[in-house]
Length: 258
Image (cartoon, rainbow, N blue to C red; front, side, top):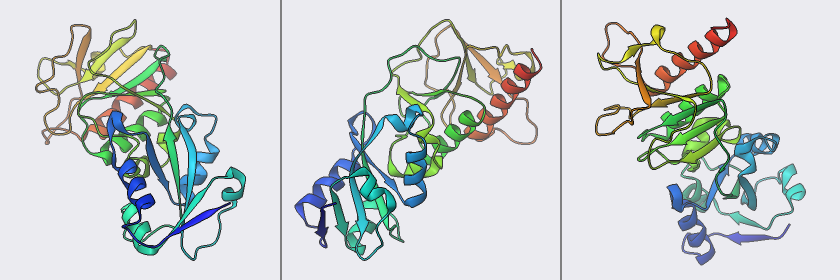
């Protein structure tokens, strides 16, 4: 593997890569998989839809570190970065030995699967990562990303998902779609249907709103039913916690044949 050594943050190649990695949302064409553990998780998940969208394009190695076994297997050109440059690129105070630059393939245009989760206005990448893990744990196949939702392919979101980004699909939506599935929005308003009375049979599309103001300012179409989780002593639940509870209820009912 040919490695280009870069020791200055003013290097043109480095500055171009940093600019590409910094793009977000629909503009993003490249991202970073940071650290040996996540790189291996990406490699192990190649038969899953999330990992298939991320095509390896360049290896990044910290100057003075030992080669990773995948470096020769992937046969990529690479950059060998100084400590300062690696910190700048990854945004980590303690620079990793390795990172992998990947390009994003186009989103799926296939019909939705039997269980889909929608994140609408979820602004924190860590929250989106937690939502992805909860959804994946209960058999969700795809995450829909509504307006204002964090970029699931930012390096921070990939780290926050702890590998879930490689195992599940993501698709951006400008508005709530409609198909033959049951569309449900988690909502704490008094008019919402309590969870124990809500139909949760698949095909199911389960939507969660913004961390702070929920569905305020969002016009939900008539085919979406609002469902609440009865709680005590607190005003609301974290978005990922609420989603996890409902995903568990979906799985419980399915197991019991309800």
